[in-house]
Length: 224
Picture 1 (tube, helix red, strand yellow):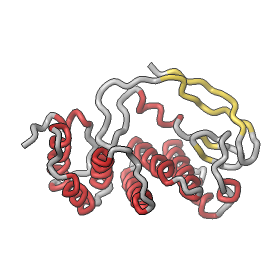
Picture 2 (spheres, one colour):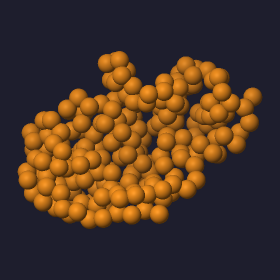
Picture 3 (cartoon, rainbow, N blue to C red):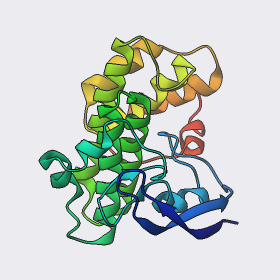
Picture 4 (cartoon, rainbow, N blue to C red):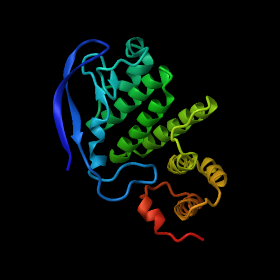
């Protein structure tokens, strides 16, 4: 069961107060996706993972917390072009995540930027005719993670699980060569779950399949 509430949040950039949805509690039933997207019911709270100020357009996980450099960025042509409040609600959610990602990247928080871009991909997965937007968002995750690695940091603490995440992101972004390279880095894996996941991803990459699958679906394939 998911519980949420509407609370007034005051924007850290402009001070404007607005009603924002907040997750009080939630739960998950079933298997996460291969890119770690949570199962229902938790996956249906995606619209509550980013807040946007209706006055100045500031987007963040919590608009009462100011991202360094945000005051200037929200007025930039580049930011406003991404924000673009026209269009359907599901498209606006994608844009809010991408705007938040832009602000976190500008502030140097590449991990937060990558996670916001991944949420943008998930929002695009849910949107009608959002396939290209989902692929672009996943490519952005890959770029941000590359920058993280260049700085000696990781998105996930466990390098094997991070590689498994990136394999799925690359495959679904149609970056099949990148996915093959990551699969080669992981190798067969030391545990049966890892072997199953790698084998499943290899099959899907060879088939040039960009579809979404759960961990449970992948684990059903017996390891060689």
